[in-house]
Length: 152
Image (cartoon, rainbow, N blue to C red):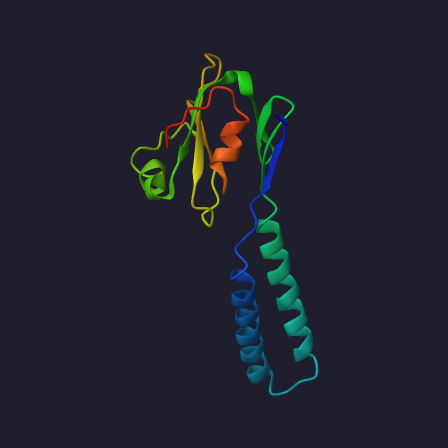
């Protein structure tokens, strides 16, 4: 079994056309206010570039299991410190992130990703009780963690 898993949490493709529509509407409002000035086309270009950079940067988040560690963005956790791991289905996500959430937990949450994995820690030196990490493929993440349970 390959000991490496990598997933990039891209924003949904539907956000790109929505951003284009928003750029067009805002640009048109500026165009109306500018009464046809020649510089108004630069506004469209700047707004389009800003929207693209925003969406691209939001979709740069990565979840990885490599070299004996779980990586969620820039944070990493040695696999041997995980006592239990399980998937959180989309139907339980709201409860897991709501009243049941421990304020000391580490969250790597992306709202557009419907499922999570919960990684319960066994480290007396760490005040963090567990990690909750967004992933589109919790089963693949859990397959690379030896202490993962089949619970979901």
